[in-house]
Length: 267
Length: 250
Image (cartoon, rainbow over all chains, first blue to last red; front, side, top):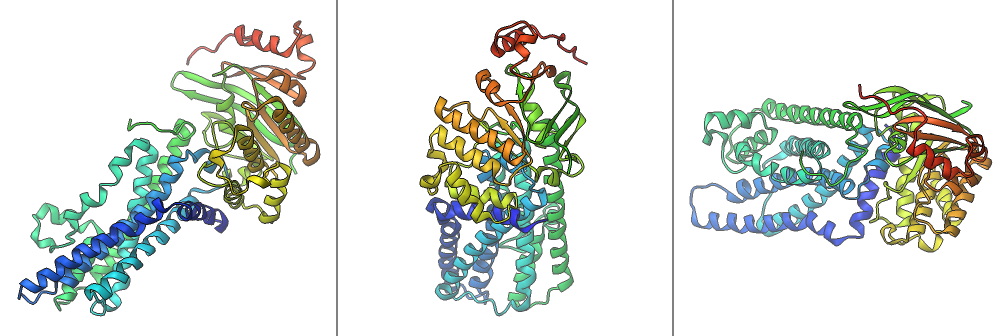
């Protein structure tokens, strides 16, 4: 892999964002709204309950982590969509660009855009609502790793779906995080769920983050091995999603789909 | 260094029972401009797409500078570039941003100086900060050609590059392309429906119909050899009455 083609993919996104407030604003707008909304809900719940549960850490912290995960996925997928919308595939894939370089460029873009969202969230949640991360300590590292890797995996998976099914399949892609959220227990323990949903939840790396987060806030121990298993699972999903994208790209080259890729409906 | 910029050997592309390209072999030498002619749907763009690596042949091989594209796609494509009316550059990037983006994509050395040189060569200095989507057809073609020569390709593929240009702009573009071949030794594969342009520019032409090469030769000598007055007449005759019968579906 060469670094300059990877930089090219990221630079293109930077150019687009720099010249377009309609692209930059959504990077922070939705997450800021979420933090403000859930910040006040947490503050209200803290004021009316005397259970000893700190809703700021458990609810607002969960929202922050979940939004970070969805921003990573959205960042990767939006970068891919820019090439779909500008019908840039022939220009890209008739060049020496490797698939691994292209995916790395998308990931680099997703990383940059999600970091902007994360910084905006932390900048609001910490001073305004008193959300602190000291209790999580070093666990923050695997937490962020799991969510980051799984966000990348879903972003690449979503891109593979759109490459195979056409631009109209965009509307199958955006609801994916919402579809997964009940299974990963963002706001409640997995034990709340029926057994079959728990089984699905255990296959989803973010579930390990939210379980661990609740355990640490409640002062209970959480096995580090389980959390690192979540990291490994998320890394495995990145590899599987990259394999799937490559497989679909090869199909698209073989079948002629790539050469005539345009605004087609889901077939 | 390979003596052939492009060597396509026994290329076939089948879609079910349809043979879009049927056992096509040809080569392009360095410094040579080869016209790929034929009616709509003849298989020209399919052939070019296979050379560009965005369409996998059902059988046959493509070698650019002696490098098999199926075995080493990235290394082979580093020696080539293209401009096609159906593959416009991202309209939401400026002229300069497009050239920087593609320069990095093709890993062009000394990119800044190369871009400045091309902006002058293709008369794009005044448009450097203009979004390419709002350029006129002629300006977009000049930008597409600047992008196509950015990496100093040894093989250049041009799919109807002057289709939407006025005669003066088209003449300028032809001059650029001839210079690319004669001065830089670039092999050029060119598709066009403008027979005057083909006669003026190409050293050799390949007539394609129903996915097969029907005729090959010097565009200035071929009409006489086949008893017609002009290349356009020959084109019409071949398009309507192929020398070889259409292939049977397998």
